[in-house]
Length: 268
Image (cartoon, rainbow, N blue to C red):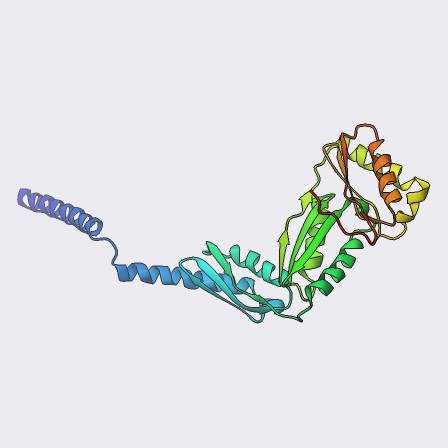
């Protein structure tokens, strides 16, 4: 009996030592490079499948995705720039994707920069007509199909509306967002409405409220007022400035109004 217990104890000790040695061996000799590469490839395959599933929509039928070390590369073509941007956002949320290279090309017709800018400017002029359109002073420029939006927007909703309108317009190859959203404050809201009334209630300026394409646009930032748009005469430009400057609480008025058929002056 004593001999059996001694042998059993010796066996337990030997088994324990073997387990310790095995653990030390695994720690000293980590996973082989081939095993590591295999695991990485499997992770990329999983991420690629997840990304492809997020692009399973008809607007992305010509888009391909591949994943290498967590970086997803998108290639192919789409009809609108908005689809390209959306594809990048969707893939960025895929499980296992850590970065996105968006090489998708925007197909569609080639339109001259001049014509594209004119058409988009008209679209933007009528955007959100019944939602404070006169307080959006969004500028636009086009170069090689790349549209840059700048100026001021009344709210993030107005800014996003302008970006969406341009992003899904045929012929637009890329969009650069430089729009500044005016700050929100009770003081600015009061000044904004009082400047609006001071300008548009004046008899000689009332006609600018008739056509949304030709309003005097008003931007307010912390009590500072900026006027944009095009008026028919220097007298109208001066009158708008005087009326806006007379509103209580206004710290400064910058008059960027352009007079029709006169060279545009660069905004500071």
